[in-house]
Length: 289
Ligand code: SAM
Image 1 (cartoon, rainbow, N blue to C red):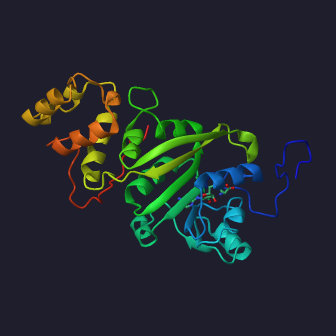
Image 2 (image 1 turned 120 degrees about the vertical axis):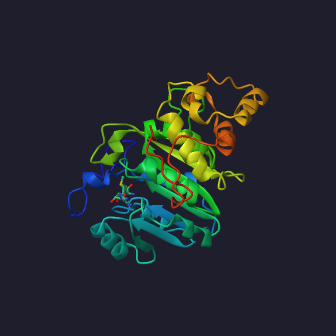
Image 3 (image 1 turned 60 degrees about the vertical axis):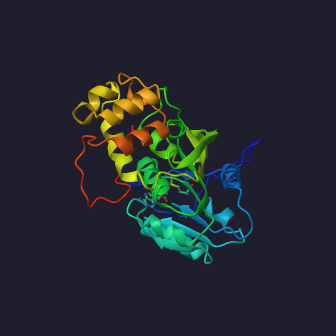
């Protein structure tokens, strides 16, 4: 520990392999921040909890004291071994969060998900989790500050994009606190932030695929007008919807809220993207900016 007043950053680490940049390994070295992240989850006795990317166990150490079922999902086999040895009561799943069958979480009602997510894949991972996890209670993630701003952005602002509209259709997002680079080893170049996501009872399960295609179409041309982007599929029904909702067809996608975009996805006949019937409901959007 660093002995200077007000700080308890861990400065020495046990003998680990070097952090893998390809896996976004920036490990938390400040127990106070770790405790704050776990406290943000608001765990109640008996709640099952799943940590994404336990790494060297900075958050796992705190979760290990929780009375409910504790699980962790990790891609790096060295770290899987480490977490299994250090925390024998934690159920460690050796898997890739980008390929994981999130639908399986439905079997654990009240599941809380937490993680200092690998920054290089945090957005696509959150895209999948919010749309495919079921029956969960709370999600708390640390991500790059800029990503946290996008996740919690409202329409009309610069940070608002496809992922804001997508996430806003499944959860209520909150920006909780900012975290400086100094609390990580190695230190990232950017600030981080913690977000808390609470499930929306009226999540867009039924419209997920259409919504994903629409968002991809609209936000890949976000500076264009709605009517221009959807020109080929513009219908009387869309005209009627615009009139009813006082939406001018010259509006830009970034000015439409999550619910408006969901409504549009329901009536858009042809939203420009190829319709592949084999795509999963939450076909991932590759315009996460
Ligand atoms: N929780 C630890 C901490 O805060 O110190 C580690 C956080 S580190 C930013 C991200 C962790 O996610 C690493 O352990 C990394 O190996 C793991 N990871 C990276 N990509 C992953 C993926 N696709 N699926 C699951 N885990 C992944």
